[in-house]
Length: 363
Image 1 (cartoon, rainbow, N blue to C red):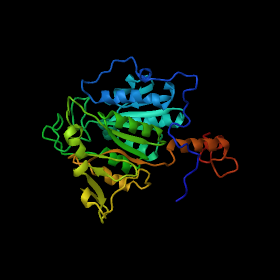
Image 2: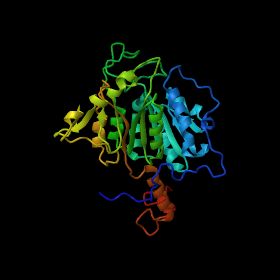
Image 3: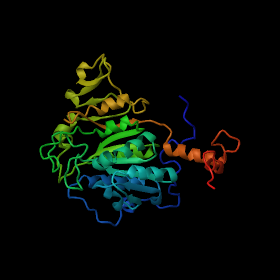
Image 4: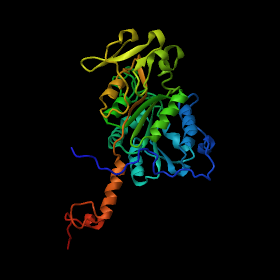
């Protein structure tokens, strides 16, 4: 296998994007809040995510005109209306495709995709996985409420088996997607999960995703109070969340629970992982979380801990690795072609490429 092309790729996803100058006034949350009335149902988790994003964007130090939010169709896809940045409310499932073109043609922009579990994983599934495998320098926020909200309560690709909805009155018989597992299977270079109601954790994950150069995928568990209320109550309830949430910390053992009930994740001889009481972990191969592991196998195993029962739900960054991005590589090829170095011939100008040997003249 040949070595990847070295384009001097910047280490940060924000590199090359114009920042505020020394004479510019600092931006605040108010500067990123549009004058549009926010139209979500009372109690929707989207409000919390919007507030977190509006409060976080000033920390990037970027000009508003160099930030773009692209959305598809769904409740979450109203997001661009409520931000005072550039934005596009596009078509169902196609936001990653539009964002790919934008990121490739405009390296001076910080490009974000806001999508939902229905928009991204149903009609948009193909666009999502290819944006991830190509490693386009975009940040994808997937709001997962395990239901179709905008179209009034049909089951979605992440709805639990047996979920009763308007389109599954006898219960869903589908096996739901695990979005994190899907992203890792597509070899996304940054994969994380967070929760709408945990402002501190959400903001921290968003910051890391924005700084990553490449395809950053963030699944956000988000409550729909109208059609799927309480879907994540087990990990939001203070009495039960401590035992269920698995906070992933790079370089530290993977654990669940607290104090006397703490459990530690170990690796079995067959490669599988399971939790055991901390008192039984001595001498066993304890799993140490490594976000920089180039092999996504260990991260995938962590994603499978969440089996739908919410007994153990990993939260945090699963993977954060560096590899060449699609848009950097494409721009590199264009630059080489323009410079005459795109083909192994003596005359490899862009005009030569356009008028190559595979053309003919019709009399």
